[in-house]
Amino acid sequence: MTVRDRVAIVTGGGSGIGEGIAKALAHAGAKVCIADISPTGLERVTGEITASGGAALGVKTDVSSAESVAALCQKVPDSFGRIDILVNNAGIIAPEVEIDEMSEATWDKILTVNLKSQYLCCQNAVRVMKKQGYGRIVNIASRSWLGGRGLANYAASKGGVVSLTRSLAIELGKYGITANCVSPTLVVTPLFLGMPKEEQEQDLQKAAKNPIPRLGTPADVACAVLFFASDEAEFITGQHLYVGGGADLWTSGTL
Ligand SMILES: NC(=O)c1ccc[n+]([C@@H]2O[C@H](COP(=O)([O-])OP(=O)(O)OC[C@H]3O[C@@H](n4cnc5c(N)ncnc54)[C@H](O)[C@@H]3O)[C@@H](O)[C@H]2O)c1
Image (cartoon, rainbow, N blue to C red; front, side, top):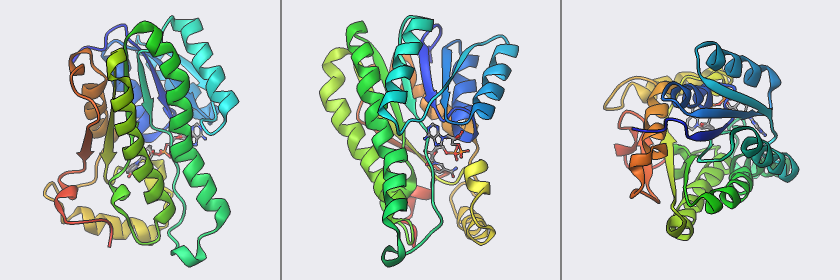
């Protein structure tokens, strides 16, 4: 799968799944911009990629801010000349709470960071990609888009990502731009480890029942992203790939 010399932005690339994706793209020869709100994470990952011989740029970005995203999509072509690949990975989760107790502030925060951010990043990156006649957009959703108890805000944001991806694919194919999304199931990252121990324990029990009975790793997700991001995937668009050891084979959401 070829991404050599392509220019990639990975949002939330300073930790977890985004870190795995950024490192996999850099290892395959892409020039990678890590766009993260955390300066510590982006400096560490950028430094590690550069130290291992890759090309990386860290840009402190708040993906929920239109100004910050516009500045990112200006800075990357200024530094690397293009934007070929956009991986919309940055995302957050909130403690599980049923709908009658769910605060408006948390709803707004989750929808803004997980979904509005992808609209902002796509809009700005697509303006560059259209001029190139080339682009690969990979959006990170979640199996939780199917719905889950206490997860209405997170599930709605991820359902929005799946739907956004389909519209992007329909609009952008004629410009040489593809859009696909990847839904991980449970992946061991700081996000997962930050959940209450009780929820982690329940998730471990669920993972043990999956056809491949283990938790996922950032590298598991990165290989699916690399496929959609590659030159060779030019005829594949609007698709939604689960990376979860077969967890999606169970009938519906998180009961
Ligand atoms: N870990 C899982 O089990 C799992 C499962 C399904 C989907 N996902 C999704 O995968 C993505 C990555 O999750 P993760 O587990 O690696 O999380 P993580 O917390 O390890 O990493 C998320 C990164 O996003 C960054 N970030 C948060 N808010 C941001 C903002 N406003 N602007 C820019 N960067 C911001 C954080 O600083 C962090 O570096 C998320 O979209 C998440 O919803 C994770």
